[in-house]
Image 1 (cartoon, protein in one colour):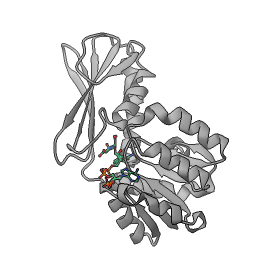
Image 2 (image 1 turned 120 degrees about the horizontal axis):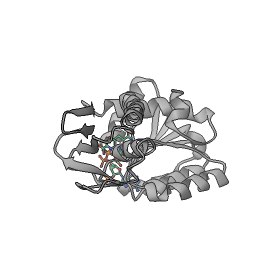
Image 3 (image 1 turned 120 degrees about the vertical axis):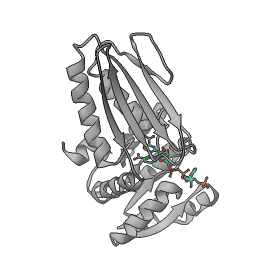
Length: 238
Ligand SMILES: NC(=O)C1=CN([C@@H]2O[C@H](COP(=O)(O)OP(=O)(O)OC[C@H]3O[C@@H](n4cnc5c(N)ncnc54)[C@H](OP(=O)(O)O)[C@@H]3O)[C@@H](O)[C@H]2O)C=CC1
Ligand SMILES: O=C(O)C1=N[C@H](C(=O)O)C[C@H](O)C1
């Protein structure tokens, strides 16, 4: 497959390595300083694009791909307020894209586990729930996209929690998400239920970025045969 990399930082570079190992080719690597190169790129030369750039860049990168009928896999987090508009743009213009806050298979299993545990805990009023995410100090957004997905999955199942806040909170309706920035943490997410008697805690710890990169690449191999706005649930089928 001929892959266009939008964003060639930590993730873009790891995806390139795994893609070459799987006999794909990289058509171009776009960063801030060579964005103009997109103008000379023939859309026919690209099978799929993969965007791991930055929050302010992702919406325009997706629209560029839609305009050129290039399916695009998007890992960039921190642009949720534009998602509805970008989805509509993709639908209106016959494009194809899939965005996920986390492409690792382990985290996608963890998303399911979180919802299952939250369902069980919904009727257990003695427990107070909170979340914590730990990432490297270069991360631009807080809380992490993964923490927001976890919070949404939790709030679907725990009736008392109606909004998340990125700080400690003792308001019963607020879900507290604490963000810590420590190098070189690739990404750790915990959900903890505390009562006077005991605590229950589930944690996912990424040991490197490889799981994120491999997941995005597998989606990139699948996406060109799809149409419209797709999700990880469509891809994973579990
Ligand atoms: N969904 C998932 O599974 C994962 C998501 N992420 C997310 O992916 C994103 C990137 O992470 P990471 O690789 O660690 O970050 P880096 O900062 O290492 O890399 C981002 C790259 O994007 C480039 N960039 C910035 N603006 C643009 C633009 N307008 N067009 C093209 N490229 C641009 C930067 O270029 P320059 O160097 O010139 O500034 C930089 O090289 C983040 O939002 C992060 O949260 C990360 C890991 C997993
Ligand atoms: O910026 C990162 O590094 C990561 N970002 C994603 C997020 O915001 O959840 C996924 C992963 O945790 C690493």
